[in-house]
Length: 395
Image 1 (tube, rainbow, N blue to C red):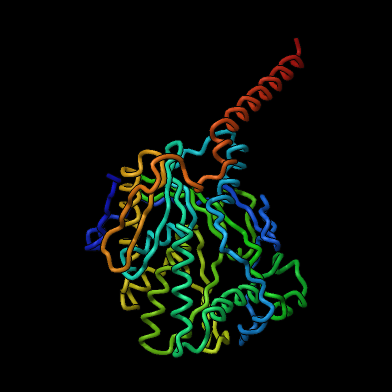
Image 2: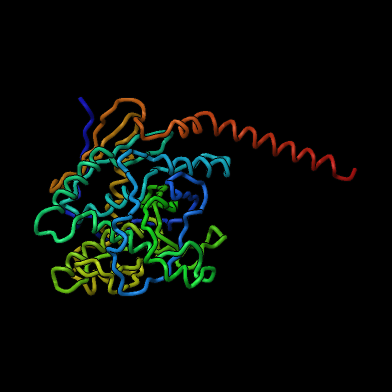
């Protein structure tokens, strides 16, 4: 009989109380996708924030939108390739409990207040680390359901158009270089640029919740000023979000629920600031607001409807991940499933052996033979260098 495990998340009050230890996210690696969506082990797609001119019509350019086809399953490929490069530089294996994309960790963190969420993830254990990804088939079917719901007659704008608004907001808010290095024309011509979501900058951070050490990879929209050379320094990342203007209590409740995911996404990757663009129902950007990520839970508690508690989310995630480590203790492929209105997360095995397609062949080869060869060569090179130094020392 297949192993089947369950983690109850209700009542959520049991996750209140003392704060789980948090390790500040620190970037250890990064990579870019260029305008052809080709992987590059560099920061070429890093962008810089500069506020757009208001008001701004977010519909402009919809007919020329270069939208990436993401129906193919990339698994953890880019993230694993960057980890290989990081381990080559260190000449050592990264000892970590969980490796995943930011989106997966966000889904887990908001579980206590997301009863209607319905998702699935795949996981595998390799050399003591759990590698966690979205179940791509489930993702595509959920997206189709969402777009079908969005096409109902009472919805003024299609899901396609509303999705475009977010990318347009990024285009009119970003620069390819710091403000001091661009021209006035560069700044003022942003509304006329072709909108594309091919290029991305992905930051890979080492962090931790409770006793669980984690590596998370995720796209970041931009940096506020510049990226410091000193890797120990925090980076002034900024996340860009659009939302409907809050004009009544109903919209306030919707916005406060959105803030939960805004906060979780930025908290996990160490993004200190979120710029929210408020738009009209027709997609005209009317107002900007800068939010400090760390202050959002307090604002929700003190000035909002107190629909969620950030500390409960952190404690829940720490508890769940520690439990997950105790469940996934052998190889094979595991399914992690949260169903709508079911107050528990299920974990069960779907493949008895192997790692499915979760791990790239290049990563498995690197970890099984490549790393040891690299370490041996590095050791030989160091010994040769030391020998040369010794022969040049005065007798």
